[in-house]
Image (cartoon, rainbow, N blue to C red; front, side, top):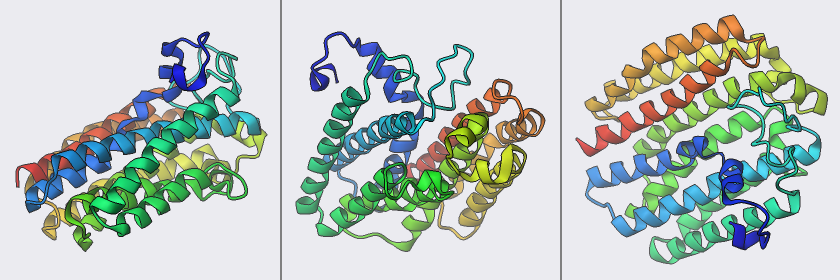
Length: 308
């Protein structure tokens, strides 16, 4: 990344902080699930899996930095206090001045170009349909924060991320193996989408005051933190209910029930959210639990397919 910016005064560790790698699973787990499902169906291609994984990781890091950069320019996520909730707001590298917006955008463009090259490769290797699906995902990732769409500022960002990081990314990552997408894969892809939706809700709560001041009218702005924490709890319940329905319907293999091991974490996260929704720092443990819930739930789905 340093080479892309041509700025030797920006340490690599600062770019790692800007990438916010704690959220990388959200970009790659749909690819892991799709790869596991392709393996179970006997159509798995190891090379295509690696390329898809790298492309998804590039988009995830690029999207994270892109959103942080635009939010910073729009007047959001400018706080540099050391006691800030580590799971909300921006990375802090822009607010601290260690990275300039222009430097960040140079890296972001490089990441998206890499993903585009991967998408063009799959258009030839797996069919033009893969490029169409990738185009939908790319549009969502850009429209989330960029003008004139700014979905995250209109109360539509959460739904956009559910779709983009759920059925869209999962379908694309399966299509590159099989050149087709069964309905079951789309249904399974809703699981990481629901997890993403739920994670965004809990991560927005600590940013309520700052987002409100900047006019970022996301769901938490519209519902208030109290309403948002209620929706967060309902979304947690929905995740496990949906997994159960897919297992009963035999869309998911029985071993995917390992996802239910995360229920104690979900209960703890819900209790903390209910009690601490008004305190940006004390709610951080709920943010952390949601990251773990995301990974555990989606890992269980992938393992279920691999063992099927």
